[in-house]
Image 1 (cartoon, rainbow, N blue to C red):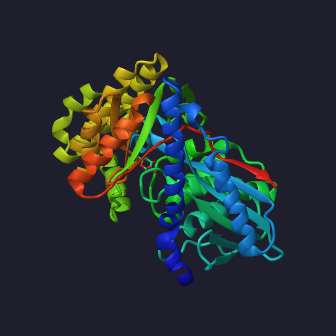
Image 2 (cartoon, rainbow, N blue to C red):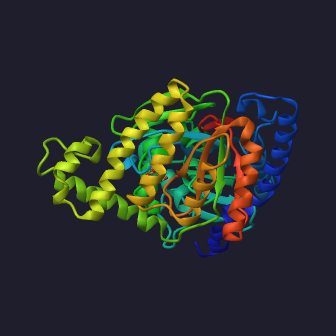
Image 3 (cartoon, rainbow, N blue to C red):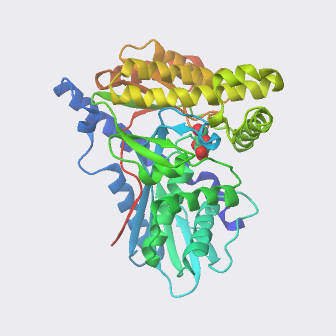
Length: 438
Ligand code: GLA
């Protein structure tokens, strides 16, 4: 594994740079379209060749170059934004994510031996494991996600054939856009196709979530794997994380979505995340001694929380308040989107951010500033941090027409305050994971 150190540290950032250029070109295409078309849905700006196809083609070309033969399968899965419903999934609550036009692709080909050999597109080093010995590395590396998925798939479906894997993507790492779930889902879809297995979507989702728990050490909820698998173009996904029932909700035409990456990456993100989960469990443990049938914070109402607030430490109480109110906001947001009430939806986004900042304490000065800047820009419905927090990205819902102006405003305001240029881009909402034989 030592051979992988350098690659592990710079895997996504390095892959990202060519795509910043791509993003600029797309933005130029977008701006020129804006000048000629007065008002149109965001979907109208999709380039003819999708960024996802481009990423898949690049994975295939890199595979040919590195392994000196063509791959037989390519699979890919998107990153995601979460519109609302943050830190609710591991409390059996509701989430409302959407898959974005940022992708991780994996090209795969058979090998004659029983090894899984994996590389990224940008480096010459490779990691190699026998399928009978798939264990997480001592250091945490991105290969743990691949190994985790492969190992759990093998438990479920039988011995894997030896394979070469080439991973390539443009989901920024550690930015709260779920690069790890997109990697897990792309690998799962690729290995399933290569081995001729048949696995229902819900099982794939659960295998990928377990890979993250057991091989990467993050006790994540089910949201990211769910949306990376079952995302739908131009739709958000309302998911009940307890029953795992879901509904695709069409996004109102004319609503644009901007992602603003603060560039802040928190080294302690995983341990803080696990700590939040423990604090919620502590709340459930205490409340369940007084309220019958409480298995998760999903089962607690605000009235009950007030009634038993004295039993909880101030910190655990704040965490519980966030989760209980966020579940209600998520259901109300889905309703607002169904009736195209973007004013109400935007207000709920701001409320969610305020709660994540004050009660759940997972925001940071940079994310707060992005939301504050958005709040005074004309054409913005709402904004909030997205994903686990502790840095990463904010998402802003706005009129499509206002995208160039708000992008500029965010760039200028953020740079003035933090002396650093944020990465701001309009995203489109895309389909979940897919694979195909070549
Ligand atoms: C991360 C986790 C998700 C979810 C979010 C916070 O993205 O992977 O399961 O808990 O944080 O909403």
